[in-house]
Length: 278
Ligand SMILES: C[S@@+](CC[C@H](N)C(=O)[O-])C[C@H]1O[C@@H](n2cnc3c(N)ncnc32)[C@H](O)[C@@H]1O
Image 1 (cartoon, rainbow, N blue to C red):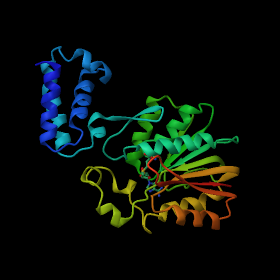
Image 2: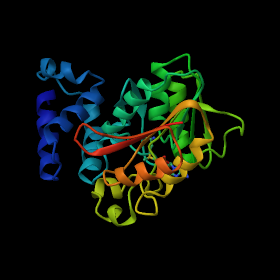
Image 3: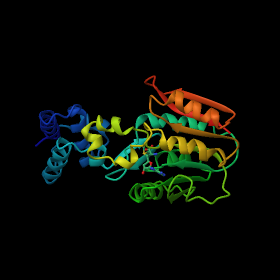
Image 4: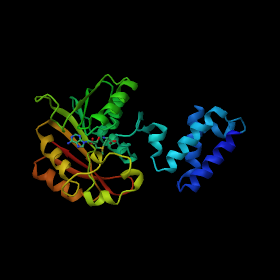
């Protein structure tokens, strides 16, 4: 079978299985198995598809049809300036969070370490660490499973400036450590909203990574409160928030006496980031 035929057959099965982006996903699945750059695929589709890869391709196509996220099947995802391993037990980093990394880098003005709370795969911590190799970066997460993905990513990226710790928000950190920047993409989906999420999310990504009490604000509120005493003077707190949280997060941060408080929109025009300067 030609590579082109393998792709079109995978595409047909994905389409019939109700996968929206079937054409592109078929190309990605085939090209990953071939170990090729997807861009090179159009030049080589006339070549033979190695028969020993067919069973594995069929398995991956079936996993996708069964509703597993493509990124778990492929095993990795590009995020900002890094490539991250992902799989069951860890949230797949979302494109809007790349914008948080850009905001973080733009507000890293004073000396001192960086902390990424709720680090998951290590996405934000590792992207900041790769962009600022001389900074010391910490990441914490309450999930041992998520943290094991972050640790794999840390080692793979040779990010020796990153330390990962397991525990609740600031709890695993030395008491006297103060930060130039604290970032967080915490769980912020309300329990009602969770029920409306797509099966590909609800059925596969960890609920612990998504849902928070108090209409999604419970962990964000704790971060806002606890970060104040953990920031160096002029240090910034930058959090990803739900699109309905902007006004309430602004109130919470203003009542805590941060010197500057802002809510910024994502590229889709939704309130997405709460920022506060100590
Ligand atoms: C929305 S995910 C974000 C993961 C990653 N930062 C990203 O942007 O892809 C939230 C993460 O918060 C972690 N988490 C939930 N509650 C926590 C808590 N109380 N303290 C620390 N981490 C927590 C979850 O395990 C999950 O990995």
